[in-house]
Image (cartoon, rainbow, N blue to C red; front, side, top):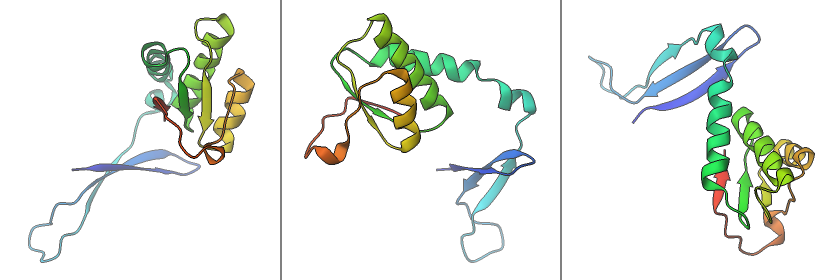
Length: 130
């Protein structure tokens, strides 16, 4: 199974696709890496991420749930949309568990009540937004 790792620099962003297949003529298994350079329009297009974030919140998050809040661009969009849904009254009694300082800050700005997982011995998390 292939795995994807992200590598970024100040000049460009690329994805490395790792496939653990042996190279011909070699005794040891060596990973093969394929470099994929996305185009600038691909990097700037956030409408599909926004649509996915909104769909995730609207489809899976229900009133009264405990929601794990991840970090990253798509998670930030989902957290903002979740906050709007709470503010409009479409969702009630939602509690978030942030996985980072960044997601805690984003959730606080969006008006999502937060708890920490350290304060509880057991938390039943229904949805995790990563």
